[in-house]
Amino acid sequence: MSSVAENLLLFRGVWHDHISAYEPSGVELTEDPLGGTPGPVPYEQLVYLEIEGNQFVQTNVVLRGRDPHARTFRGSIVDDVLVFDRLGPKAPEMIGVSGGPGVLIFAPRRIDEEGTARFYDPDYIRHLGGDQRTRTTTLYREGELVRVLTVMGTRISSDPTQRVPQDPRGATGPVHQSTTVSQVYSAEEKS
Image (cartoon, rainbow, N blue to C red; front, side):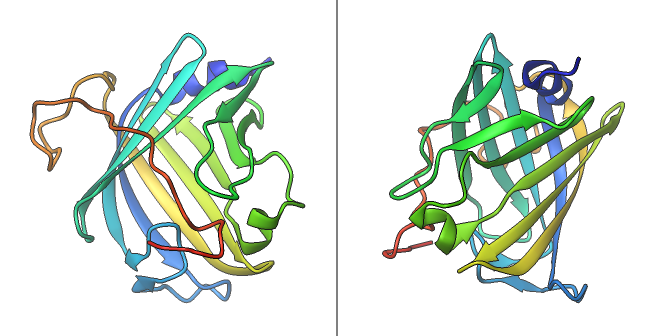
């Protein structure tokens, strides 16, 4: 068995991600205007991923290639499924499920809601062993595939409760902030 909780424990820590984006044809993008946080690509970020009991929190901090910012996401494991806190107005219920050993999928529980017709971006995350992982995100806008995000990550710390020296926010202070609210699912979308 490979539960969501067991898989999340494989990913616990601080990751240095290298992110690139592609058109569905495979052409590499230099700008990603349609993502949840539009901006230039490629870029790098730190990902603090913490799981304690049934509570999950993840904070992404831009490291290079984009204007500095941080985004925090929270959730709880309920009936062996990670259920994220609502991401914003008209956002679907986002869940995390196991795809087998070392594989996580973050996606809406249902795709027939108004918000998913506007914005739908499932994540497919794979632990490669040791301190390596990949993530692929397919982005759909108005029902059409418009972009593929490819992420290669290296774990640089096993402790997600302390900021790493590379963190552009500084080495001290809280790792996580209040949960990020996104407008991408609503008609009043703002970046």
